[in-house]
Length: 266
Image (cartoon, rainbow, N blue to C red; front, side, top):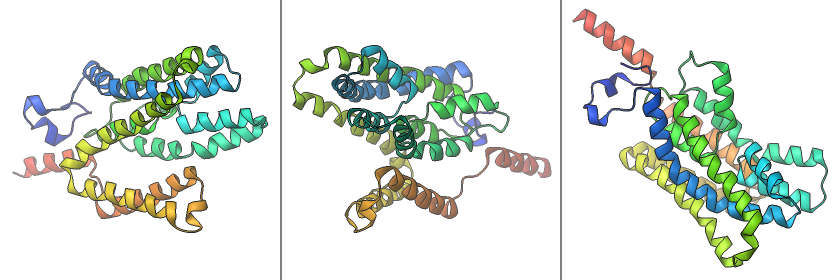
């Protein structure tokens, strides 16, 4: 049994098992990451147009997208550049807007094998996005870092390519077409969370509770004044903490030890 495979998976039919080799995980990551790449390309195209409007060149926009793979963070940075804000203000704003990725990175470390080298965790954390996190977090058993690396490689390529193309030819398209491209990201994220939610009643309830809580924050006085970044952090901590208390996830190693003990006793 591979360390990236749970005991229940090893006993499952071969066609339903998760990949066990790094090569198989990379192939799966590239396949799962391709729709993300297409969605990122569409959204970053609009980002490239915004970058061009504030005076960034295609090269500058490329390194901006490569260095900060976050749509909200980059749009916020471009808004501050247009307003003539200082460097410190841009850094602080980007940290606040992107703070949710800190929580996502901490969550993914719980799915890694404890023996995973620190440098691999750092690379994994750098490329954490909402979609990468969504795909990586639903993997059964331990998460193979190569799977997330493959998703990041193809999705970030689409993100950077879309940004550059938006700078070069973006102004040719009508505003209505550019606005419509951003819808692709929401549809793509729904495609990530719906399949696992269909298989797990508790997960369906958690998704519904998340949507309801987010809507409540958007209309409730005082709560709606909280920035979107902090709103996501508050909801993530509250809902993830409640879910962990109600339905904690078993440790695959502990399950394997329990099975071994039962086999010895038998």
